[in-house]
Length: 77
Ligand SMILES: Cc1cc2nc3c(=O)[nH]c(=O)nc-3n(C[C@H](O)[C@H](O)[C@H](O)COP(=O)(O)OP(=O)(O)OC[C@H]3O[C@@H](n4cnc5c(N)ncnc54)[C@H](O)[C@@H]3O)c2cc1C
Image: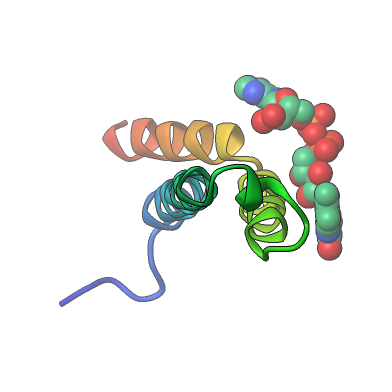
């Protein structure tokens, strides 16, 4: 049975990991489209800014990782 609500460690790691994967995937999409993927004509340019934002707001990924590590250390005493 999965924990609900998710622990601070799980939610911090999932937020950081999923936003990193989102950026990675949009970058790949832009690369596939080539120069056109970089232009505003395609939604990939906006998708990259949106994905990048998720790495920054609601706690930057660096802070989420620090939070997860601190919480893990606290749990271990
Ligand atoms: C479009 C947009 C919408 C937003 N909406 C909201 C909103 O609705 N409500 C709200 O409250 N805020 C909102 N924000 C603000 C957002 O939450 C902050 O931008 C975010 O928390 C980062 O804070 P900062 O910009 O002051 O960066 P800083 O805290 O100055 O950090 C700058 C960089 O340093 C890194 N850093 C800082 N401290 C450490 C550390 N100890 N170890 C390692 N790295 C570190 C950070 O990870 C980051 O990469 C929004 C921002 C944007 C761009």
